[in-house]
Image 1 (cartoon, rainbow, N blue to C red):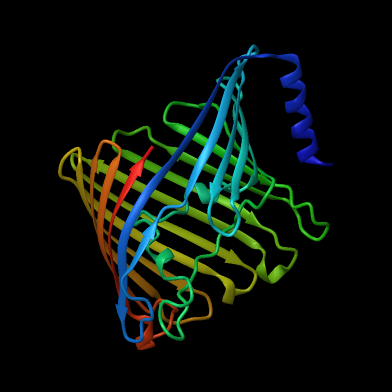
Image 2 (image 1 turned 135 degrees about the vertical axis):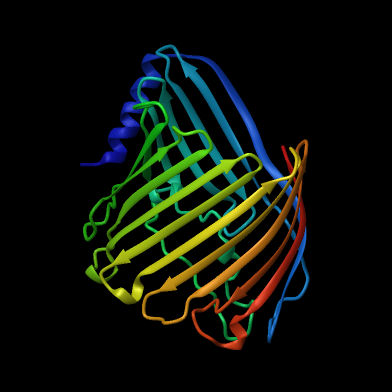
Length: 318
């Protein structure tokens, strides 16, 4: 059964039978500039400048039958100019169904970003330090041509998301996931998610589970999170624990301190990261300064695997 064909046929039928009352085209993005640098034994990258290079074009319209259809394209001056793109159909009664041709999220990926801001992501590339490649987290990703369904509100304070990756290859099974978020207590947000990982090979198939809890009391917010990627081969398993505490000084200024720890199957040493971040927002401009410390980034005790990173930047949203 071709799920993608059915979905697009149903959409085409709805567009034929109902005309749009209003349409809107928007362009959004952020111009950003920054300066940052790594330091440590045999670190190859010194101070460098960065600049943002992407924006999103999106359009939406409401049909006579009450449904809203929106289309989004991301233009990115990276490996491919035409990047993430999706089509979303929604209404108050049915919820929201998103078809992602590229760049979609599984249910677990809506939860698995760490409360500390994925500090690890700045160290998982090659070329930062000689003979060191930082550990990159594994996830049950949505893949291309996947679907994410957000149910209408089932009860106050509870939201549910489901994902489906049809896996058109004959050697793999479809991947299904779900995520539940609860916000029924003032200041509290708690989320849990689980998604299948089916690669066609028992050693690399399993599931990813994730949870995230944050609680705000006055100007202080504390959060903990966990993502557990558990597959057939224990050497491929990966788990990250994180916590973060932030203090809102004013409507414009906030400070935070976060820690992440990655346990990788087949290793006895955990990768550890910490970051202090200060952020100031005024209108559409955000100034950010951060200082990070990383140890054992490749899950070894090599002295090359310890380093620090600083960054000062400005982002202008439009």
